[in-house]
Image 1: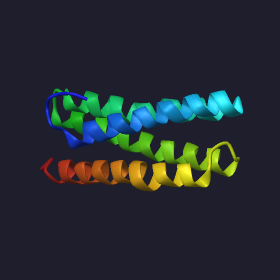
Image 2: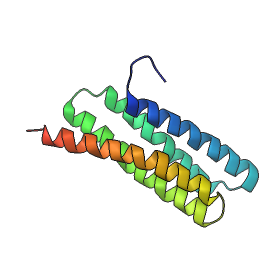
Image 3: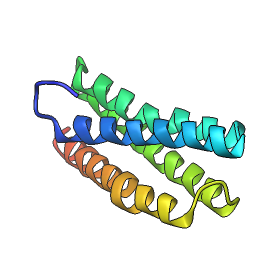
Length: 121
C-alpha cells in the first residue's frame, strides 16, 4: 500500500481488495446486493480504521480506531458466514477468507488492543 512498513496496514488493505473483488463477483454472478454490500462496507472499513489509527493524535485515539477495526473484522466474518450459509459464496472461498485473513487480522488487532490497554498505565 505505502512505503512505510506496517504489516497490519498492508494485510488489511490486501484483505479489503479481496473483499471488493468478492463483492463484485457476488453482484455479477448472483445478483445479490444487500448482504454483499454489508460485507463490502465492513470488510473495507477494517483497513480504513487501521489507516486512521496510524494517524492518531493520542494513544486513546489509536486504541479507539483499532477497536473499531477489530469490531469490523468480527462483523466481516459474520457476513462471510451468512453469504456462505445462504449459498451465495462457496464454503471453500468463505473459509479461506475467514481462517486465513479475517481471523489473522482479528488476532493482530486484539493483541494490539491488549498491549495498548496494558501500557495505558
